[in-house]
Each structure stands twice: as C-alpha cells, then as structure tokens.
Length: 237
Image (tube, rainbow, N blue to C red; front, side, top):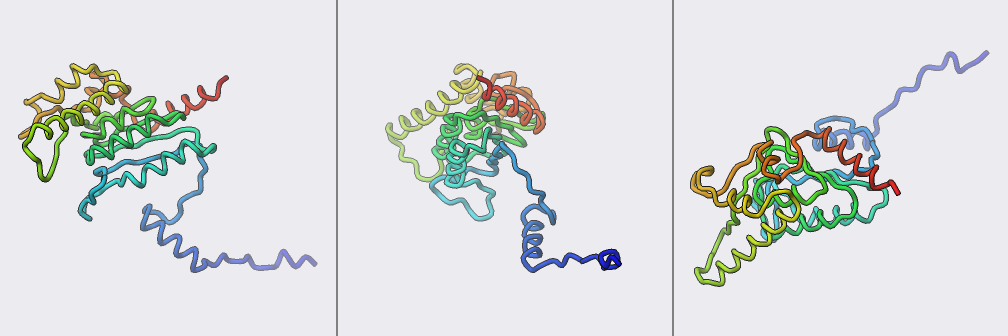
C-alpha cells in the first residue's frame, strides 16, 4: 500500500524571517511580495531635490549625489548591466552636484535613455540631456532659468564673474548634448513673461521636443523599447 497517497499535505509555515521580509516589503513597496527579476537594465531614479554639499531639511524629498555616483560607476563596470534607464522627477537643486552627475551619465559607454516624469526643472535639464536618447511624458514640464544662489552673496565683480562662468558651464553642456541652439536656450532663460517674480520659461511635453532639448514625447514603454534597441545595436559587430 502506497502510504504517500494518504499523507496530508504539508502546510508551509511562515518563519519569523519571512514575516520580517514581508513587513519590510509592505513598508518599502506597498506590497507583500516583490517577485525576483533579473534584468540587464539598471534603473536609476532622481527625484525631489538634488542634495549636494549641504544637507536639506528632513522634510524635503531629496536625492543625495553621493548615493548616485557609486551606482553610475557600477553601471559602467558591471558586465551584467547593458543599459541605463534614468527616471527624472526633480525640482533641481545643487548646481555643482547636478552637473557632476550629468557629466558622469554622459561619460558612460553603455546605452542610456532618460525619461522626464512630472518635472525635470533647473539642473534637471542637463541630466535629462546627458543620455543617448531622451523622453518626456506629455504632461511633464521643464523649467529653464538662470542659476540662483541662496545665502550670503558678496556684491563684488568677482561674484558676478563666478555666476557667469557657472551659467556658461551649464549652457555649454545642454547645447552640446541636445538639439537646442545656444541663442534659443538663452532666450528661454531670460524670458520675463512666463514666471511670476522670476525670469525663465516653462516647457510642457512637446514644447521641450519642439525646442530640441528632449528627443521624444513618450512614456515608460517607449523609453525601455528604445533602450533595448540601443543595446542590441551595440552588440552588433
């Protein structure tokens, strides 16, 4: 007689470790189970404000640049990673830190695609243009404006020369990594009719594409599809 036919099914008992993992998943991801999935694409998110050398208040949503830099190194060095998907929803932030990240993204040898969701404002503009191909959601916006400085400003000619050099660095990067002309970019930066109590321009979706800052209007599906195309093209001899 086969005893196996009459044995009761063994119930899986959740261990304390499994319960802790599920509780952490609920806290971090809003779900009990996150299915394991191995991908050749690394997804990097830049949200809130880009935090540089000065800590932002605890209530601010921020992306620390010292957390992003090691990930970019890993993308370049890890042979299992074949492409980078950069998701942006940022209000800007530290100019030095943002420009440093943009330079790192641009220097990665592997295919890379950016997607602006919600907003890609201020120093988020160079980050969006640093990839091989850029997308923007139809309702997303980008604010183009001159650099600003908070805190103590010394009213001497050296300060204004520093502002000019910093603005030149950002302008050069955007022009060199997108299809917008220098004259058009400077015109958008100095417009006085768009922003209240400030100068600059807000571009919505297709407007950013029309001016040549972003390559395409699209969403997540379009960005991933394009990135996989670039990965396959890179594999060809």
